Length: 68
Image (cartoon, rainbow, N blue to C red; front, side, top):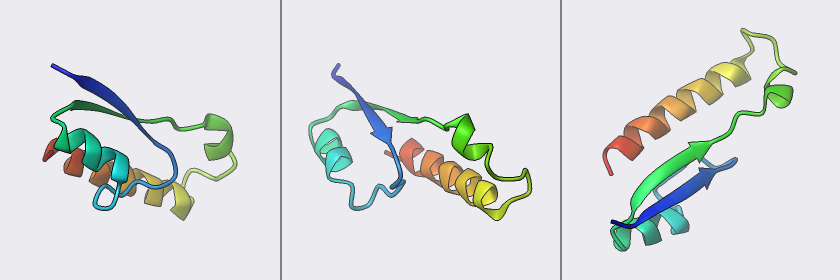
């Protein structure tokens, strides 16, 4: 079994992600990672729309990755 770590940075799309396409095409088991920097996130109040957007985008990414 071949395992690859894929680090998501700013772009959370999978449809046009060249790296992910390569891993999928070559039958890798993919371990997706996204690191939330608490210093960056701490700049925004708890109810800030950017926090909600990020949480929603990560939830959608999780759903998509589970289908791969």
